[in-house]
Image (tube, rainbow, N blue to C red; front, side, top):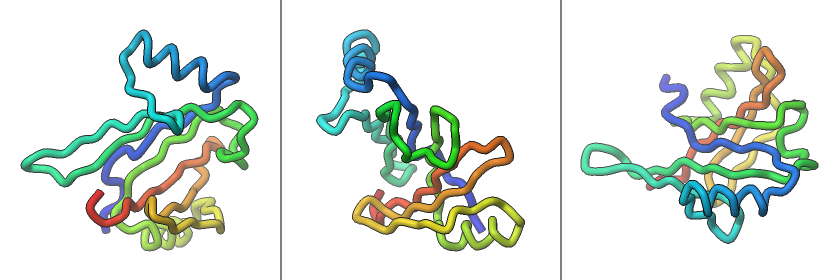
Length: 126
Protein backbone atom coordinates (compact mmCIF):
# COMPACT_ATOMS: atom_id res chain seq x y z
CA UNK A 1 0.00 0.00 0.00
CA UNK A 2 1.24 3.48 -0.85
CA UNK A 3 1.50 5.68 2.18
CA UNK A 4 2.62 9.32 1.80
CA UNK A 5 2.80 10.56 -1.79
CA UNK A 6 3.90 14.18 -1.14
CA UNK A 7 3.46 17.24 1.03
CA UNK A 8 -0.01 18.71 0.74
CA UNK A 9 0.63 21.73 2.93
CA UNK A 10 2.48 23.44 5.71
CA UNK A 11 0.32 25.16 8.31
CA UNK A 12 1.53 27.21 11.26
CA UNK A 13 0.30 29.62 13.90
CA UNK A 14 0.96 33.35 13.79
CA UNK A 15 0.07 36.17 16.18
CA UNK A 16 -0.95 38.23 13.12
CA UNK A 17 -1.58 36.05 10.03
CA UNK A 18 -2.57 39.03 7.82
CA UNK A 19 0.63 40.93 8.63
CA UNK A 20 2.69 37.79 8.08
CA UNK A 21 1.01 37.11 4.72
CA UNK A 22 1.71 40.69 3.65
CA UNK A 23 5.39 40.28 4.56
CA UNK A 24 5.69 37.05 2.56
CA UNK A 25 3.82 38.66 -0.35
CA UNK A 26 5.91 41.84 -0.33
CA UNK A 27 9.33 40.37 0.40
CA UNK A 28 9.23 36.85 -1.04
CA UNK A 29 6.66 37.33 -3.79
CA UNK A 30 4.13 34.77 -2.53
CA UNK A 31 0.75 35.07 -4.25
CA UNK A 32 -1.42 35.18 -1.12
CA UNK A 33 -5.06 34.30 -1.87
CA UNK A 34 -8.17 35.95 -0.41
CA UNK A 35 -8.48 33.07 2.10
CA UNK A 36 -5.01 33.86 3.46
CA UNK A 37 -2.81 31.11 2.05
CA UNK A 38 -0.72 30.32 -0.99
CA UNK A 39 -1.28 27.56 -3.53
CA UNK A 40 1.82 26.14 -5.20
CA UNK A 41 0.49 24.17 -8.19
CA UNK A 42 2.65 21.44 -9.68
CA UNK A 43 2.49 18.73 -12.25
CA UNK A 44 3.45 18.43 -15.85
CA UNK A 45 3.58 16.03 -18.75
CA UNK A 46 5.04 13.24 -16.61
CA UNK A 47 3.19 14.04 -13.38
CA UNK A 48 -0.37 14.17 -12.12
CA UNK A 49 -1.65 17.66 -11.33
CA UNK A 50 -1.49 18.71 -7.72
CA UNK A 51 -0.71 21.48 -5.28
CA UNK A 52 1.01 22.25 -2.02
CA UNK A 53 -0.49 24.83 0.34
CA UNK A 54 1.23 27.31 2.66
CA UNK A 55 -1.04 28.86 5.25
CA UNK A 56 -0.66 30.73 8.53
CA UNK A 57 -3.44 30.27 11.09
CA UNK A 58 -4.43 32.58 13.94
CA UNK A 59 -2.33 32.00 17.07
CA UNK A 60 -5.42 30.94 19.03
CA UNK A 61 -6.60 28.29 16.55
CA UNK A 62 -7.47 24.86 17.90
CA UNK A 63 -7.10 23.26 14.46
CA UNK A 64 -3.77 21.72 15.49
CA UNK A 65 -5.12 20.42 18.82
CA UNK A 66 -4.53 18.23 20.66
CA UNK A 67 -0.94 19.06 19.67
CA UNK A 68 0.71 21.97 21.46
CA UNK A 69 2.98 22.59 18.44
CA UNK A 70 2.66 25.81 16.47
CA UNK A 71 2.75 23.95 13.14
CA UNK A 72 1.22 21.03 11.31
CA UNK A 73 2.38 19.22 8.18
CA UNK A 74 -0.27 17.94 5.77
CA UNK A 75 0.83 14.87 3.80
CA UNK A 76 -0.85 13.80 0.55
CA UNK A 77 -1.87 10.14 0.64
CA UNK A 78 -3.43 7.76 -1.88
CA UNK A 79 -6.08 6.21 0.42
CA UNK A 80 -6.63 7.93 3.76
CA UNK A 81 -9.04 5.30 5.14
CA UNK A 82 -6.65 2.41 4.41
CA UNK A 83 -3.69 4.31 5.84
CA UNK A 84 -5.56 5.23 9.03
CA UNK A 85 -6.55 1.57 9.48
CA UNK A 86 -2.93 0.48 8.98
CA UNK A 87 -1.68 3.09 11.46
CA UNK A 88 -4.23 1.97 14.05
CA UNK A 89 -3.14 -1.66 13.55
CA UNK A 90 0.47 -0.55 14.08
CA UNK A 91 -0.44 1.02 17.43
CA UNK A 92 -0.22 4.67 16.32
CA UNK A 93 -2.24 7.43 18.01
CA UNK A 94 -4.89 7.98 15.31
CA UNK A 95 -7.60 10.55 16.01
CA UNK A 96 -11.16 9.27 15.70
CA UNK A 97 -12.33 12.29 13.69
CA UNK A 98 -12.17 12.25 9.88
CA UNK A 99 -13.48 14.74 7.34
CA UNK A 100 -14.81 14.23 3.81
CA UNK A 101 -15.61 17.34 1.76
CA UNK A 102 -15.20 18.83 -1.69
CA UNK A 103 -11.58 19.49 -0.68
CA UNK A 104 -10.89 15.77 -0.21
CA UNK A 105 -10.68 13.30 2.65
CA UNK A 106 -8.77 14.08 5.84
CA UNK A 107 -7.56 12.11 8.84
CA UNK A 108 -5.05 12.80 11.60
CA UNK A 109 -2.40 10.96 13.57
CA UNK A 110 -0.21 12.15 16.45
CA UNK A 111 3.52 11.47 16.07
CA UNK A 112 5.70 10.28 19.00
CA UNK A 113 6.64 13.91 19.82
CA UNK A 114 2.98 14.91 20.12
CA UNK A 115 2.74 16.71 16.76
CA UNK A 116 -0.56 16.45 14.90
CA UNK A 117 -0.05 15.23 11.33
CA UNK A 118 -2.81 15.75 8.77
CA UNK A 119 -3.31 13.08 6.10
CA UNK A 120 -5.07 14.29 2.97
CA UNK A 121 -6.50 12.26 0.12
CA UNK A 122 -7.09 14.86 -2.61
CA UNK A 123 -10.32 14.78 -4.58
CA UNK A 124 -10.14 13.10 -8.01
CA UNK A 125 -8.12 15.15 -10.51
CA UNK A 126 -5.95 16.86 -7.93
